[in-house]
Length: 580
Image 1 (cartoon, one colour):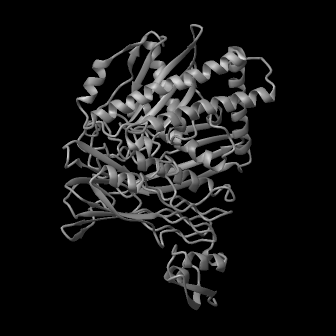
Image 2 (tube, rainbow, N blue to C red):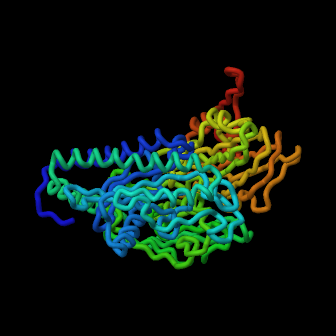
Image 3 (tube, rainbow, N blue to C red):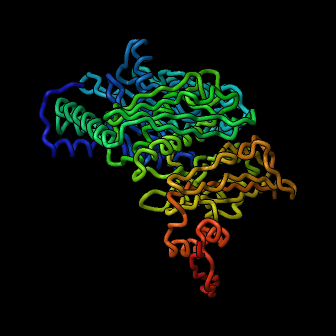
């Protein structure tokens, strides 16, 4: 869009707020209307408005997942190309797809793209993403640590018209529901995703009715240009240079060998170049993501560092990318991609690790770095119907120059919340024995990392448990002298005996009978700065709050106990620093 119209600041602010409110309302409507808890409880969805010509993000809802921040822009741009090759968008069309090499992420994330026409003219494109609980495949829920090709993970949907000029292709949905384990939930979530476009249409039409198309287009152009200028102004403050970092995945779920992620960030004036040359080639197992998702995660990382920049396509313009193809960060057919939820976390980690060298006052240590998705599936004893329960890890964030890391945080890339314990026990034949903050999981530092969590699920009936995580062998790192966090931990108790999977944090379709359990413990975040410089009162508070043990207080922080007094049913400690 190019406009020469001058927009006053008040109008621009009101329009920007209104567009963001429209997409926020779309988020909330889908979250409230969805059938499956992965959307209604975990918020695994996103909504946005996109430029009909360029596909750039105009506005995106704030209640969905950051993971889709830029990947939906790339998806829309690729759907635009497909639609143009088939005659262009028509009024009443609705496209949908889940092809991960086009839309990024994994097969469970289904994207709908709807053109918006005003007075017969194509004005923009709405899009949404929603996680469908099951897409068929070898493993209920779609996370299959031993998958070696995409078809083992479920059904691939290329860009197709679900509605063609208002005509609904019901046969297409019957084909899909015949190949998934929970067709009723799928149809309910699809209906909610389709209906939410009406919320967006009403809001956009009201805005156009108030300001007119020309003014609205001019505002959108200025919004994107301002975001670009703002992002460039922050980048220009980073010292020029190339900053390099390497990190590793434990394994790919199939071959027990580490996989390298290499990143060199070059800052030149107000431009950023993300170069992943040296990253491991495509994994045989599912630890792969599409190139669009890699790009998206770099931009999510920048948004964490520069949170004031509005989320739209202008903020993405200063970045260039070099990603070797094929590689674990640029998946190509037929590579499996079920590990998307963990690979995305590592992109955030390496961006933080590189930029911490350049702007240490702004960049934290590594967060917990694994989504560690645990899937519990089976048939309900009372009805025989399938169920799939999905639990993405919460964990600790890295410490920073100004504060300790967040305790029990959602993944930085996805913001997917942990399903409530009460709702889980109501819906599924399982019991949570505990759900707790994990002591000693944070990295020590002047500002320590946040603690991870631990929980144990006991089966009340026969079920299958699949876990796809990482960060056991290669733990979240500290920066500026801070210590690393604790490793991930997965332990099954089967017939009274403990068992750790050969791939440590990856296990597929482990059969549990009533009374068997699985225990999971997420890492914390890395520490920031020298632990011996941490305020002794803060160490004391951490010890008394149960975030660290005395062993860590002594070994990492150089403290010793001078007093131990009973307090509220516990012991309250007073510390002093040992002489060095």
